[in-house]
Length: 330
Image (tube, rainbow, N blue to C red):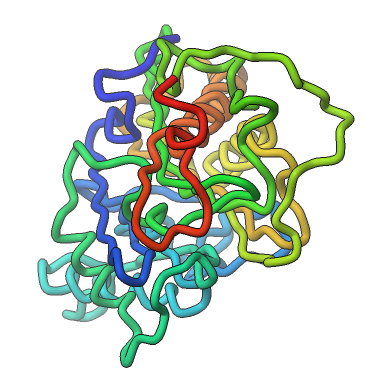
């Protein structure tokens, strides 16, 4: 396996990503959009999730495809970001057809970034505006780090961020991950070494490898007192999956989160993973291919988490340093 050309989730052909941020509020929105509606599943492992239209992603529900997925800051306020995306898609004539009407299907998930030093004294909920702006800016290339849904993200001891990574399997199937890292726990240990180091490819988050101070039995570093958490992610593939298979892909991808953030899936995190299939490539071995896809999704998600933290940048009013401020450029 190797990374794709961009090492972004958009290496899965037909997908684009848009970011919008508000530097004053220290928050933002990220949108994943397809050329056409795509199959999506969801699995939640955290104890405090916040979602919109998540029930319809179950395999037994009527709607089997969605138009976009939204990751947003803002806690419950951020759920309104999907409304801005839905408005923009409807204006473009996209959405589920119902007797002459178009209803865009836009599930979303939120993270808590309300206590990060930004000015939250807004007169009107800003997330609908940010959602529509993120949709308008969607493309194959997009910023990582302090951008989009990762703009105000934090960890226990560092700024979090927006990360992405991809893999091309020997079969030619592509897998990618997109994540907003905002955890109770930490992505690093010791002198800034990433928990995800064993899965790094090509020095994509500094190339430092694993280092001294690794102690899996040590008490984890957390921001438990603030309870401002949740890591929300999307994994995507061009392999043809139905909703049940996409849900299993999301389950497998959670392994990658647990490898990259310690601790993960706590009662105070809303950790969840969406899984997307564009359906471009048929499975060649229905018995073995899902196993390979799940492993690749977990590897991509681990790398994406570390890349998001590594790419974070400083800004006035920050309450925590970013990785590069504290540990150098790698």
